[in-house]
Length: 262
Image (cartoon, rainbow, N blue to C red):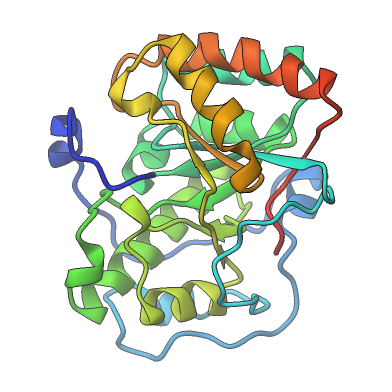
């Protein structure tokens, strides 16, 4: 999400936790298929963080380290990405809206939120959406911190999300506020998570009004296909209302919905 800090008090309560790494191999076949990362791959260096050596035990396939913006649905493709959840109030509403319009999205989850609401993570995956690592505690100044700290934020969130999902790993990594570094991109990519950017920041986090969110999408969509929304961090009723208007309108205009390229 964009690097704004208004209304971010809830994030200060989010604390990275957890010892060890347990990647659950079991899970529904559909979920396993979505993981999309099998076979060997490069792993982070031992000692990069408290959990990195254990994380390295999971077999993954490295992906491109460049920040993805394009859609796998082609030139008329649009990627819906939803950040900061899961949230017990707003994530179910987003899932209902996406289902209503037959749209798949990418959910960029904060590690502690996923850990707190594993049922919602499983619902997201079961509905055919993709998972994205959005760090443990949504620290938008990650790019100013040590590599050890960046590693802990990325790898611990990966573990938390994977455990919460029942074994499905995140396919992308989105740095909070876009605070990528060459190190964080390389680390995420080595874990099979394509660094994920955005083209259209709807600024729904600032609650500018439903009309303003819709207008931002219409104005900025020519900039590229990846749209940024939120399902946590406060009242997301404007986001829900905007999606109800944006999704059918884009379909009417001939757009198709896909996922960010990997």
